[in-house]
Length: 351
Image 1 (tube, rainbow, N blue to C red):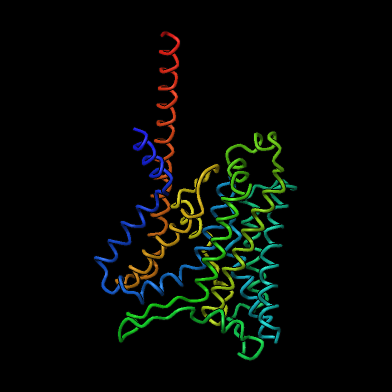
Image 2 (image 1 turned 45 degrees about the vertical axis):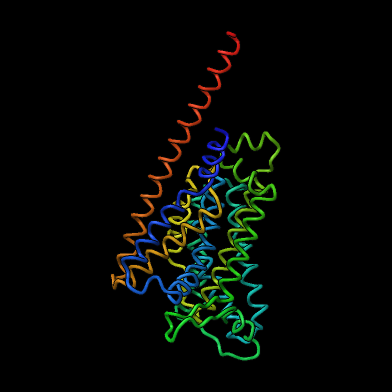
C-alpha cells in the first residue's frame, strides 16, 4: 500500500504537460516526414531557446499571481540596443552586458510600478511592453540593424558557433549539432530552477501566489520578492534578445512581437495557473518545447504560418481547461483524504 502511495505521489509530481508533449512528439514523429531526424530536432531545440527563456520568466510571474507582458518588448528593445552598440564599434561583451542591465532595469521598473504605485501587473507590464517596443522602433528607425564583423564581435561569433557537431550521415538531416546558444539557455534555465528549488525563492513565490496577505503576515517582504521576480523576468527576456540576435546576425525591431503571448501559452500549458500559487519551471520548459514541436510539424507539412497563431490560441484554451480539471481533481482528492482522516479519528475515539 505504501509503495502504491509513493508511486502515485511520484506521478503527481510529473507536470501534466509531459504527457501532452510525448503525445504531440510521437504523433509528429510518425505522421510528419523528416520530423524525427537529428538535424530537424537540433534546429527545433535551437529555435526554441528564446521562447523557453521567456516561458520560464512568465511561469515565475504567474506562480506569484502576476503576469509579465513586457517580455516580448524587452526582447525587441534589448536586441536593438545591443546590435546598435556593436554597429557603432562597441565591444560585444560590453554590448551584451548593457542589454542584460537594461532588461533587469525594466524588470525593476515593472516591480516598482506594481508594488509602490499599486498599478495592476497586467496594465503595468502591458504599458512597459509598449514603451520597450517604441524604444526599439525609434533607435532602429524601424529598420533591421546589423553590424560589420570584426575583432569587437568575435564573442558573437563564438556564442553563435557549435559546441558539438556529429555527422551521422551524408546530408544535413543526419547531422547532430548542439549550439553554444542552446548550452547557455540550458545553463540559465538550470540556474533559475536551482534557485527556485534550493532557496527561499520558490517557497516565497508560491506563498505570494497563494495569498499575498498571508505571506505578508508570515514575515515575507512582499514588495522585495515581487521586484526580484520581475527583475529575473527582465534578465531572462534580455537573454532571449541576445539569443535571437546572435541566431540571425541582425535584429528586426519587431523581433519580440507576440512572444509574450506564446510565452504565456507555454507557461499555462506547463501547469502554471493564472491564479498563482502553483506551477513549475520544468513545466514551462516542456510547454515551450510542445509549442515548437507543433510549429516544426506544421512547417514541415507546408501549412501556412498564419495558422500557427490559431493553433497556439487553441493550445492555450486546452491548457487552461486541463489546469482547471487538474485543480478540481486535486481538490476532490484533498477532500477525500480529509474525510478519511476524520473517519479514522472518529473510529479511534469510538474504540
